[in-house]
Image 1 (cartoon, rainbow, N blue to C red):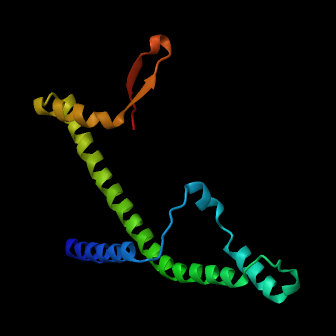
Image 2 (cartoon, rainbow, N blue to C red; image 1 turned 90 degrees about the vertical axis):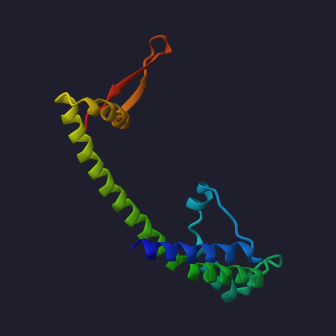
Image 3 (tube, rainbow, N blue to C red; image 1 turned 180 degrees about the vertical axis):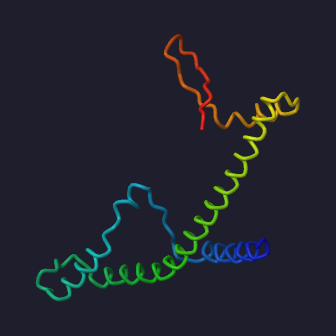
Length: 153
């Protein structure tokens, strides 16, 4: 699997290189705009209705430019959709692998806790280091001090 991931990474690097060298200007949207921008169906309907009812089209509206924009969206989406599906699969796979790693780490941590409670000398250092994952800091209003408490899972 490592070899396949290396090959995929090389292909993606080439793809990203090609994208960055293209004359097409790519734009990054803020999260707010991205959430708001679910209007493609509206734009398509407006364009179709503008063609069907030219008497309603204001003289300052350039339907040819609108068509170029719609074509650009369609072309970009034909690239984005299959890539997004693969990115989603990669994200899901990474999440599963991370979850499995976390489960294994918890098994080890619980073994270390048992060894620590049994008085195994080296277990104290390992326990204290791993325990940091489960400690949260809560601000105590008295005198602006912070207090750490272990959260039991």
